[in-house]
Picture (tube, rainbow, N blue to C red):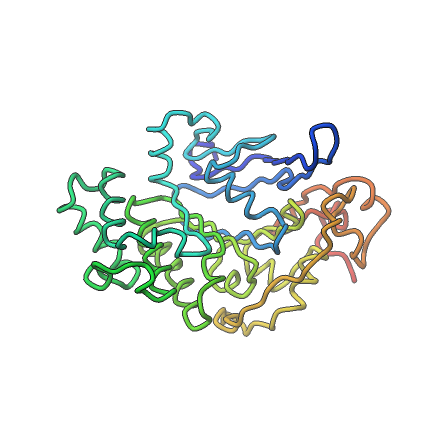
Length: 335
């Protein structure tokens, strides 16, 4: 498949930060040689799952062009994001790639009515030529998330519930008619009773609006429930990636296996059984600086080479696994 047939193509991206003074300090590789892509003609929900410090937020900033990669490149509709320099080009990019943030109340000014913000969004993106046309555009976007303009009209963010504000935040993202939504921990600050309502909304957007979603989370339960594919992140790497049922029902990487032990066994074909919130465990900060596999210090199947050189990405069945155990490509090793 050629690059132009991909909606998003992340090619071997690395992001490094310098920590400490100008004459000393150390180098932190927050995102390390990550690659994945989304097809133009097949909307899907691709999840990046990882605990705090796994690199997923840095990667999301990279995809929104808040950061540039130290190495590698990100292509959207065939264009390298690093070549976007003009304000008009960036505005066109943001029409097609919209974020939904963790805290919905940070999306809106507390001093401004929600409806006024949404109407201005429609006008500023050129979706409506005037405020009168914008009313219809905004109402349609709100109805796509189970609300209406009448319900939020003349109300400030604090006058809405957390679930309502997050749905309005998704509606704001829909106004520009995007092809991709990047949702960074969108349910972590929502009450449990509303969590499934929000994640079901992303499934609806994929199925009915043909919008692809990159869903970033530390919650494996909602990841299993809504994802088509998943990438498990550990200290800047994607250590296992593939169809969500493969990766979470029958994990191959030792780290993914450790995570799988902390979640309930799903009933066959019943993703709703994963509706309980399950978070990834806390790991050591020193793993970022470890030479070789970042999981080597805790891996029950560790080998000498794991402490020496970064493991390769190996294709096994329908997934990619970053692990020396799979170099012969014959399937999962005996345990």
